[in-house]
Amino acid sequence: MAVSAEGKIVVGFDGSEEARGAVIWAARQATAEQRGLLVVHCWLWPLFTHDLGPVEGVADSGLKHAAELILEDGAAAARGASPDLQVDTALAVGAAASVLPGLSEDARMLVVGSRGLGGLLGFLVGSTSLTLAASAHCPVAVVRSAWDARGPVVAGVDESAASAAAVEDARELAQLWGEELVLVHVGQASEALDAAADRVKAASPGLAVRTQTVPGRTAAEGLLHAARGARAVVVGAKGRHAAGGQTGSTVHRVLHHSAGTVLVGGHARAAATIPAAPDS
Image (tube, rainbow, N blue to C red; front, side, top):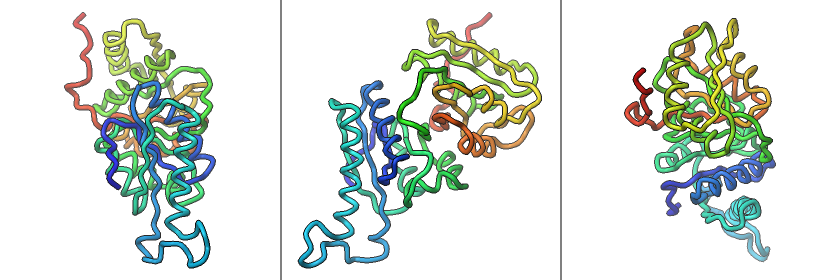
């Protein structure tokens, strides 16, 4: 797999309808950000057999040919969604849980479908989704549908550095899409929520920003409640919510129960890159 992922949006494709929606979403996002797109299909057969070529006397047969057809199908879906987009492809040997985080080191964003029929995306319904969210080096978008209706971008806020970085990811999405940004804190009123709003307003003065405190709920319940009708909900990969406890469980629940796209953000941003709030 010689194709570079540097600066591109990388999307996994296994041939399922969920993966097709993720490819279409990723193509539109890459077009909006004026970036290239890399469509990746992971296959495991080379780890088990060397008999990958065509069956003698049978045209267009063989395990490798089948994998290449799946990959080209994904690329065609991307080009159909954005005809002028630069689309590259990669056929990667190995499990997606190990291949995709490696590609994410140079990628702008990693995009996957919420569920899959094969070995590439099916892990997202289980605990490996948390492994991907924790091990990726860039934001991870888990797409529910290619056809995102208009709606706000909702971001969870807590006191962690990862949360602050995820809010920055959410700000960029909201600004790019021209949507309102809703910052949500679960628990009592928090200085972190006000500070996050100040940072966003300083970085994007024209962006519509609203803060919301959701009392008496777990972090996941509060975010899911606030995210009804949202275009996307953004959560930090490694933060802690106000009531204590790792947000790994929050990410897991949001991934399982969100009706829309989930962006697990805050992976690669150093604290120094997050704009400071202006002095009062």
